[in-house]
Image: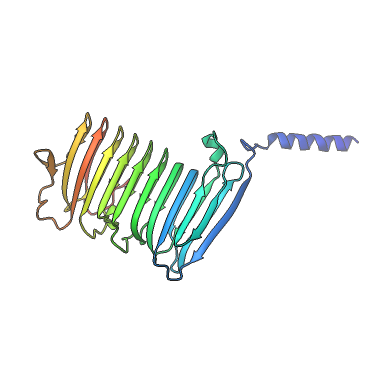
Length: 286
């Protein structure tokens, strides 16, 4: 009997020393995938509440592959594919869930390099690492909330992208090697976060952009040799033109007219800062 009491006592101590989950997590995993069979296009509509998100190029022959880890008490994931549209929703199962309740949720998505893509990525309190290099992006719309996001184009886009739209909330947002994408049109709407746009890479053509910033900061990292024209309108926003020449309400880089690649931006900023940094043939070290 004494040995039994000792064993029960040790078991109780061990249970007390084991850290409990903050809300009794029920972590589960699920996956979905499809091979490329000659599809003419793929539209991806992704919604994600909070957690970590990774998007990468997939292997040749892959249309898409998604691996999801989630807390079943918090998230009710849904994934479907029909008529060339992949929909993934990792929204919340219940309201008024704190950020710590999303700990452990994870989505890893791979997209095939052979199919033209139309991307709509919307997420909230997410740590996002998106590498979209080497794909065939036609249109891309990235909408973030209170997130920490790094968007990279590590390899040249295989087609010319028509439009890249970035809507950034209270977040730290970095878009790197945008020259590899060279969208015909760039649209950026920034809130109160810090936004960095790095235009290094292999340009396919001129880029026309419209940028609207709130109280956040905007940094433009531009390779030397790219012709830059900035039409800047600001209200109490600090602007560091970094060698640009002002003509009326517009700033030009030296040699703009003769440049083989041009970046034309219409920027409106309020209560924030705008900085231009020149790159000597390398991506910004961010």
